[in-house]
Length: 265
Image 1: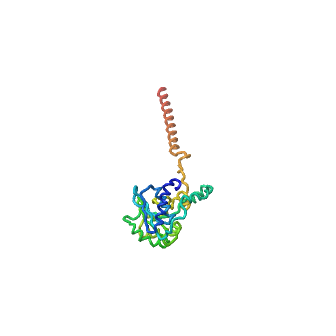
Image 2: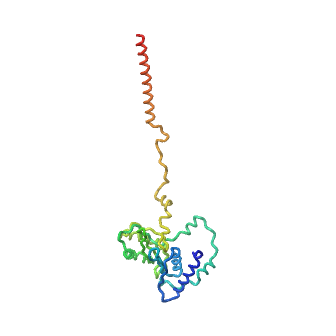
Image 3: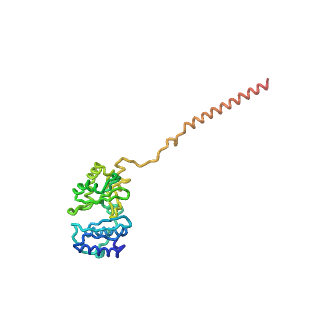
């Protein structure tokens, strides 16, 4: 990302460093920008130990960053210095290994078909104990589809790996959501800073082990029982036709004999 827009990245890195160096500044808001540029700001905020948040709908969507207790100082090296000392890329892995290593870790829960009228405050109040016991805070966001994203993040006093914590608490959260009728289902997912869903829990199951576990077999074309079997209607029809033919032949002979006798008389 840095190599694709060097000037932009260096400009905003300087703004981050000025903000980080000023002890009186606690919050900084940037102008609206493109999704890729916002994604860079979110990544940079994470490297600096700052909290970040995208606000307002497009085309006015912008990023704000905040200092929290976990913030210490700006990184010692600049992005340009890190790029220069970056080691050579490792040999390309096999496709199967590459898929495993590039999978985005889960960082959120997706609540499908939430209860009508459900509010952000209700969700926070109902699920805060479960997140707090796992050392996480969380942000609640409603997607344009109507579904709800609960994005986990380490609390100020805990250094918790979000992916592992969400996996461990999923069962508890799912039971709580069902018991309070907050939503119809809960799945783990990975979202980017703009709340685009990159990966969902069931994606790796489609067409794979889930079918074996359920005892599903590969679909087969239906076998038509009439193929290769002589139809009874055809057999009966041919017999009936044969009888009619014989009857007609017999009637024709009888009529001819009577006709000859009539001539002799």
